[in-house]
Image (cartoon, rainbow, N blue to C red; front, side):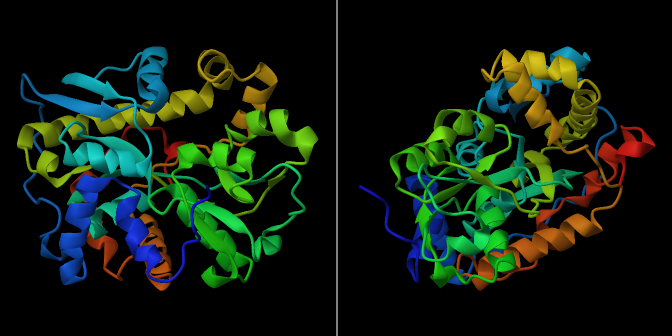
Length: 354
């Protein structure tokens, strides 16, 4: 049975239904004031400790073991204990893990912090990696007659409001001159997109560059295709709950982690052959040719010393969601903990700074 299209008041209901019952309770209670996060006071202001105290630990997200592999291959270490590497990546899952206190630090796109804010959960952005090329392609179901984003009119589109794929879709609709009511937004999480495409539940879904080759290999001969756009999701970021950043020891550990995170991304960019073999071929089951095609679409990591562009982009994203009735308009500056602003940039060579 297919999910209903996302229209009218359903947009606000989907905000909570997509992230689980526990988040829904907090989100609904917060909406009584327009946004539960209206009561937050902004990022902590205490100076960061210059040394991580002994015995400090963090629980860090590492979707599909990516972080551990980067650390292993690049021979990176941190001056604290990583008590758990959580195999979680989707924004809604990360927010739930933050709420459950089973996760301290995660890597996501720009939209999950907006979702968390609107649901009343206080978390802050602590590092920024700017992406200049698209990370997603729009894939069609088998047998589709869709050839461009303008053909999305009247079609069922997979929409994950709490993830990067959601805002990429909204930006693509805007560029194509389509209003939300010109399409049917089907509420799904990104891990449901492939099944929804295969079954014909949706006509189009945004897939990551690394997912598209496998999908086309299986369904390209049956009329499935991908549609490229110039729509980018500018921000890849690290973020953490306010409670973590208010803990002086854990905040110091976060500050110590950021340089290694940045160096890991730089290592991956500079060693594509090894990364293709060790990650895409060995863990993602891609052929070497498919892995090389994915790597060719990869973004060079860029860590801006100042976050002004990132803040402006995040504001545009929040405003775009507000225009569609998905969240209420707010000032995104409070999502950024600028104590951490220059840490990533200082850790990498000048060519990787914006």
